[in-house]
Length: 357
Image 1 (cartoon, one colour):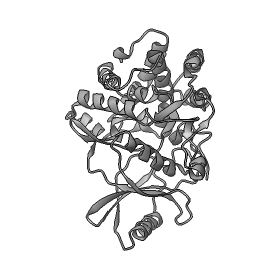
Image 2: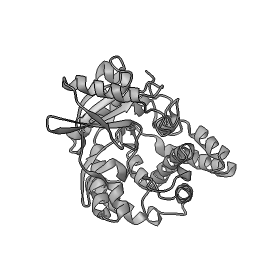
Image 3: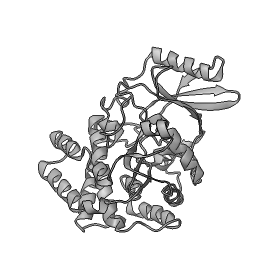
Image 4: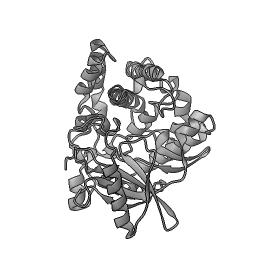
């Protein structure tokens, strides 16, 4: 198994980058293996059907004993074992009152089956991104509630920073980040990401130099004594519910130990200043905003938009159209991506406020 020591964000930094996105992980042989694994878990033949997951994993559904189950499978060549980490994170998140699906089985050893898997509770709710795009979501209410939830899961603090050490978890039952300092994690692969965007003509060499200059100028704000739980893929498509209520926060498979501003900045990758105001009000109903919040917000928005730009270029998202979960228009997504990068730069330069997003 390979740990995530060299990974800033799995989807773009994994050894076999964009494996899941390319759709090359599917096969009849895999489908049979998943069927056999699920049937072995329940002790009888259980039909399995494909689900429509849009994340890092292949997804399936199964029904047994009057209950619906959601199955996630990772069969990449990189041998990732983070499903076990995610299962442990979910147990912890439940203890602070965050609604998440229950995991009934998880195994990343690949000793019984040639893939890692989770069998979990199926949550029969819409992802809120669909409701938002349909214009039926009470967004101020949802953002306020989500802000409360972010503040609550930040009660969970750990040693180390960045992705959690799966080997440490298996050996000692402890979640601990793989990096000694948060600065080390923040700058991990940043130069490589910027070089990629420069090579693909998404950013100019001058823009990349300015981004790195600003990040280094404000790097002292990344000196954290201890980190907290960060979802690291916080977006409405990873929140399930109805038009005015959150039923579950899902897909914790990129979670890390990091800066409390990070998850808040991730919502800034998609939402306006007005919407962010609702999110921050919800957060502040539970805890105070961190010190130097605004600069730290821009610093994290910048880093998050850089890795997202790498994914969007590498996966061909800017060429997509139709009913794509990020955008109906790839060229508009590219313009929005560049606009948010520029906003983060302007924010660090003191030329923009969060309410201006």
